[in-house]
Length: 448
Image (tube, rainbow, N blue to C red; front, side, top):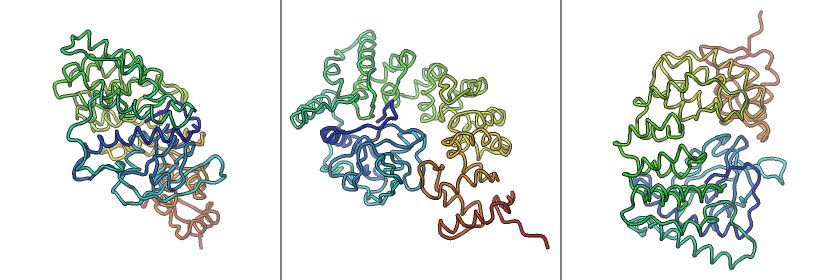
């Protein structure tokens, strides 16, 4: 799920009960789609809000879950999962990090407003479906009507528990209007178009979105043959969350040209392009948009923003003629760490100067410097290494992308406890030189 605000959300007991009652049954449906080789979905029961430069905002926990038992609560911010920073990651990235084999351990680093220092909790992953094993799940997904009816019944039950309102910008706040939207039998294209438009208009005021919301199933109900109508809605709406999720489920090989034609005006469709393996077919658009990208004047310059998936798609072409533009995006674009990861292994790409320029820009802003310091340290920038050492104390104000201890052990000769590492740096800072061949900082030996 996703929120459009990064501010802390105070979740009432009724809200947590509500989310528990709504989300768990819907996750049962998702669990049956899981690959048999990976087993059923499992996690810790954290209800995810916004992810930004601070980390993942927790908006609640499910009752009886590992998260609830560990004392995690709404308003907490998870800044690391297993020592991996969550700064500016996508919801899908965070979900993948938190989930894992049933019974396996996950370490969450948490910042809480009432506490001065972050703290770490170790939780064991449990099945997200508390009372249904995979063998007992229904053979077919619930219909749209089933999901709406189930959601309505749970809301009515929960409203009896507390008189305080708990509907806070999620799909349940639109339940009454969603129930009125019906797709007639044998619908015409005009019927489908009106049906899609009504769903998106009703959902326009939401601030929290989930792949389990009824709107996704409602849009999927139009069928693959009507995908052109859904794709056209991308051009008319600022937020395409539901349209994109439904498109991912409806798209077929015969829709390739439809998606390629819409890509220039809806960049988020690059996620479909990547998943379907159509990057080469979309190369003219992908490369063209990157080439004419003018750079961001500031981090709020959304009109000039290119998605990380866009850069990933261009990099997948492995076309040396794109390297100059990719380096320029690394220097001047947003999400430098994702850009670097996408391009660092391209054959023959030269990144030394680009990393240096990117670091000079990132180092001026604390959260950007934290995101790129690990990369710059690996390329011999001493001030970036110092930034990584500052993160050893676990302060939320000094976070870096990745585990600072592991970075230090990899790019220096230092060893020992965190305190010993810090002492080593303080003692040798002015004597450190970077060995480019070994890609490591070493203490310069005194001349004899």
